[in-house]
Image (tube, rainbow, N blue to C red; front, side, top):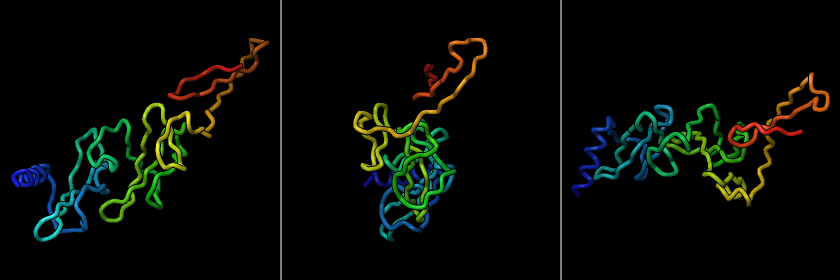
Length: 173
């Protein structure tokens, strides 16, 4: 019981505002506030569910996967993407298959887009709706090709640089 009160006091001190609202179950849910840093915590009480709108620290965003504030290196806010449904989708704007877009339902039905990068050695498989070992799934995205014409070298008039993973240029002839 003491832990529950300590937790509630901690939430109040974190600049959360308590109100009876849209909570229908206990948990933490993304909300539309503060560039993906905001989340709503719903706590069960005697009078029903109480809603606390909280914000992650500066260099963190709220992860719906881990249900906590996480570092922005592997999980990014993606506000320019227009989610039309809840689920995981291929990220067309990325050059490889390691990243995907996750559209998550928030507290008020909001569908918030997040750009998530799969762990090293894995790629996103749309069929399995998850990250899988890169040897088990072929990435169909072709790398960017930059063609450079060189006038002073007669034998090698065309050199192609291929942008591989991690933005590394590779020379092909």
